[in-house]
Image (cartoon, rainbow, N blue to C red):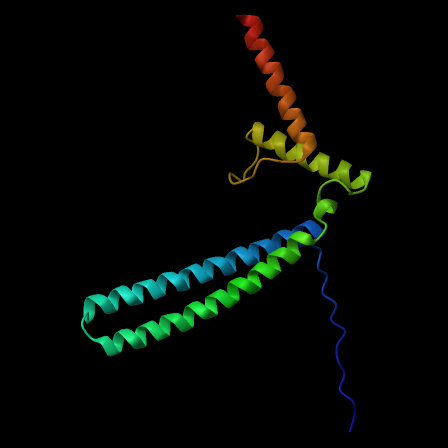
Length: 156
């Protein structure tokens, strides 16, 4: 017998720390949405039962036990999601914004400036582009607004 050969699989994942944190937060939010749909289904189940057979006490007890079991499962899932959220929040995400190298800041600033310029000049093909929120672009926007306000005041 020969030993099995395992191929060397090394996927290249190019996510930054900030992107990873955002994905974790999104996964928590999606799980919360899923739990809310389950809660809604339980409420609809009770409403349907009340319309169908409002006088059967034995069935009331069975439905109550079923809903109670589901609510207990949802509460335990909520507790785990709370722990997960607390862990994600405790991750030092300052590296996402301010602690990057000056080279990275320059690259980010250049990308943000291009993105903002494309949006303002309507050269951007993507209509769902989110406005840039980096501090450099935001400070430029504030300066432009101040200049516009000064011009308006000078006209009066």
